View 1 (tube, one colour):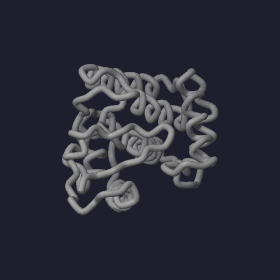
View 2: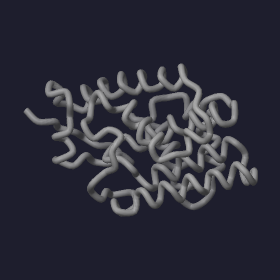
View 3: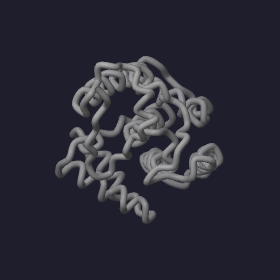
Length: 198
């Protein structure tokens, strides 16, 4: 019995060959997958709370890959690895590393020059990760945890609340989140920052 998944607006479909990377053979539904992924993510969050990371450590491609592996490594074989296919969102698969390096360099510039507030730096970084779409799946959840790591470890701020609800489920909170992303896509981060802090 294979893995059967339904998708809601804004979710990236998992390719058939990526589904073969599922490490738990008993999972067959979206609900079961969500449950196992959420347990793995909670372990990753606990790991981030037990450790302090420096700016130099966070602003590396290796660290971004490590966070994804911590979040999904017990569920997916490809956790922490660049996607090998193009998706309905994101840069061309061959441009991923180049774009990640550009993002890291941009973030260093923003910090040194105090270009934006600390919240906006974390949100801009998170948004760009999603635009690049480094991994086969889990990019949104990964980007939000990375934003939390940046704001708490690099700026000493409190982590974001992200609408104070489960935004992986269809509903008004997810709609508000997607609307904020569309504003950010157009270069306006105000709604995204407000959403992250509500």
